[in-house]
Length: 372
Ligand SMILES: [Zn+2]
Figure 1 (cartoon, protein in one colour):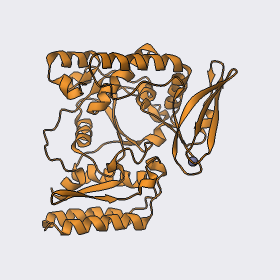
Figure 2 (tube, helix red, strand yellow):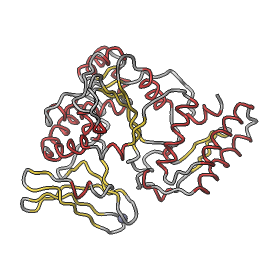
Figure 3 (cartoon, rainbow, N blue to C red):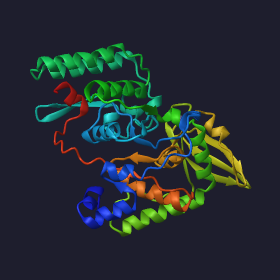
Figure 4 (cartoon, helix red, strand yellow):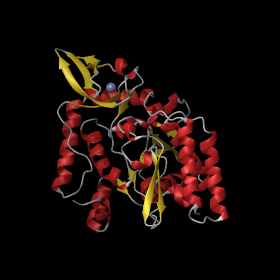
């Protein structure tokens, strides 16, 4: 199946991407941007500029592709407002760099875990850390660095990072990761971006209204989504996502016993609609989400333990003009844009994909920071 990089190799592929609002040149992308209809954060300011965002799960360390997104967002030209959305609402086990520093030693890699594997099904915002664990992990990194005959500059860089780990008041993995990320972005990459945290943004009335709309159009959303996935597969393109099941809801809930993230599914009793799920610990959940054609999310939203799934970009549509996306997000962005057009009567979102920086250094941001 073709990936984005394969499509970019041919004129035909590039044309297909452009028809689907995927751009690789910032100037082409910015001319597509229209001002948003509302501003997040209940801001009453005049809406005089387009708003562009990039999103990423909040990791402890990153590969070059995330750095490319950060730098592209910071370098966008023109009167544009922008923000970087850090997702603290994903499972901490969904990528090793969320909870580990991977350090090359000779021909192998040593992984320094800041959180145990038993937290892998818990969202990073609910993974508790203790200061002892944080300090022992940074000391372990120091030991590995000292074994490699480091330069004076590397020792200084490590000391600055160690200071952060030693002095942090972070109590969750998401809090620590945000501190480390901000440090790497500001002190190492030396760029300034406006950070927004997903668990806070999803409480915004704009997002909650869009969620209500998405759930009220559930059947049409599933149909448009699945048709689009099918169409990409028929074209030999990897849609990056699978078809949605009939009882799909765009909702997760973190169990209040053990914090495990549970998928909620749709359930109907008479004219009443419910979001239901069962945790591995045995606890079951059922939230009333409305009657007849009225969607009411008060019960599940008031828990502050719900989170969105990969359809999160659909919930941001009214407040944004365009998005900077990675190579896989661009392909399922085609699916999401189809849902916006066909099921939600909204305009698709223009997307900008970073040109690969050509950086062949496979090491992580922390590694490059220490060895700069
Ligand atoms: Zn549970």
